[in-house]
Image (tube, rainbow over all chains, first blue to last red):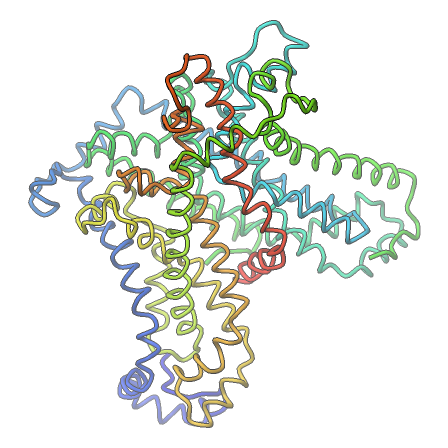
Length: 323
Length: 296
């Protein structure tokens, strides 16, 4: 590992034996000589320590009865009391299932869309047209989540354009934002509308690296378009898809929390209350600090387990891994 | 890519035809809602509600925009957002580039441990409540620093920067080293000028991310005069709270609703237009950013 200040592989091997004996000393000398490199790292290390590691210690309040007056140290330990309270609370089942359903459906429905878009864009032969389509499809990515939610309220209101269209078929306008049954559809559809185009960039780029001769050869051998997409294009995309899928599953418990909160109305709560929005309401708004921290911790642990599990599964199936 | 049309069968041609149609539909799905809001912002609200879009000049108005410009809150939000986004970008990109460069040096002593230190935050975090309590204890509540500092360093960006620096030809550094230059000197005189693309990519992502964010501001800021644009928008679009200054005199409830509906459209346009106009010029960099990231 520590190779002193050996600057090229060759000098490393030449002087390896000397360094072996003096590793400790040479490390110190290296640090002394290159202290500026460590100075470069310092701000990032300090910021991460303050804003990432201190809250990890702060999460111990999940096992305490935290009161701001007593501080984290002074508050009493209560063990798993808050976790039990959450698990036994009457709305636990609903909130937990809402979280799982919302993110699982979003992943299953949303994940393939950019791939399909990229495969379709790849068939556009004229690169100028392709570039322009891509440019248009990126646009919603740059719109803020507040505006997306605001647009959802405008389009889906009982007096909005969607209901105006539906008026041709049904008698009474539907109040989409107040009916729990529409919440997930709205959430997922607006998500696809906003990000599928931008998410396809990475796949389009991967496809443009495919050697055209591969396609030519396959065509000459009589492969149809669909066969070529399946055996050449999709194979090319597989590793990228695997990595992105792992990342998506790791984020499953924290997915789209900011948008979910914006799309919530008092009427659609039975479908729209997810763990993170609940943490916010109980932990911060109601100042039930320890209870909120406990639910949050419960959530991060599930995320962590999911990430590690999926990484292992995909690794076994595909040979791709995240870390 | 023009040359593999040698032997397309009939079904392939049909498929390609439908592919074109489908892409046209996709483009329409993306653009129509945006156009609707844009046109709607110039229409009298009652016309929009009763008749839908109208191209009759008699129904056009810029009243929504006038009201927004006359009232201070959106404009102030705009300025606040510029301030927060710029501050966030400077802190985030500056520190990320420095750290990324150090970590790109192969024989940096302790590199593995430092990398692990950063990577661990990818897998576990304290969560919303402990982070909030920390910000509160630091006395940063209701301060712009609460927006700028907590999210400034992300592992992902450090990895992006490190990957970029690793990709630079080693010969450059070697040559300078032989001349006796220290790593710091090499960084300033040789590496930094070459790092423009990564600085640009990171800056774009940071700036836009912060520009469009509302959540940290919602939990950390109380004072309305500190609100960034997105939070002002949230009041107008989601909470249906229109500043009294935008309505003017005491008006009937129906009139109030009519106007607040119109302001929604104009507010969306004003908030989204800057990025909508600018992003095509930066398309190249966004694509670059995604690609650097995919290399790990």
